[in-house]
Amino acid sequence: MPKINKKILVVEDEKFMLEALSDKLKKEGFKVLQAKNGQQGLETALRKHPDLILLDIVMPKVDGLTMLKNLRKDEWGKEAIVILLTNLNSTEKIAEAVGEGMHEYLIKSDWLLSGVVNKVKERLGLLTVA
Image (cartoon, rainbow, N blue to C red; front, side):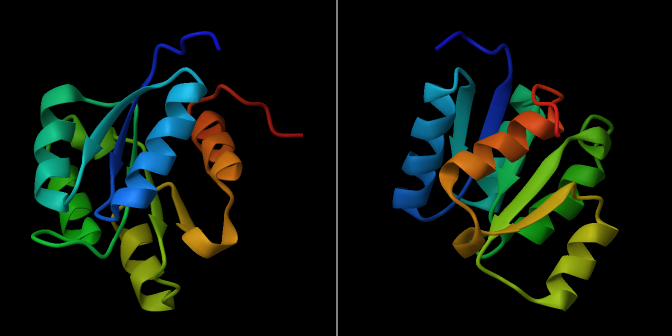
């Protein structure tokens, strides 16, 4: 697989999901950064400036929405592309995430890994949507 010169930060506390997403993205040629909670995710994002962040909401220490709010306070973070990937199917949480400027809200159970990777590619302009 050719190298795609894009960094993806996966912020996910479920080890299986973190590894599965990371492996799939690496196989597609992305450079993958990992964080196990929102605090680690925010620190990594602000230090490494990934091209896109895949962000879970329910996590220990700092949840995904709090991380997103803090990310948006940063000059670079204001423009960061964020896709929320979560099990929460709450209209309230979706509305809150939209208010914080997330780009997609994907419910984990509705998506295959390949579909998530295609959403990442689409958001980065690497995939044309028919």
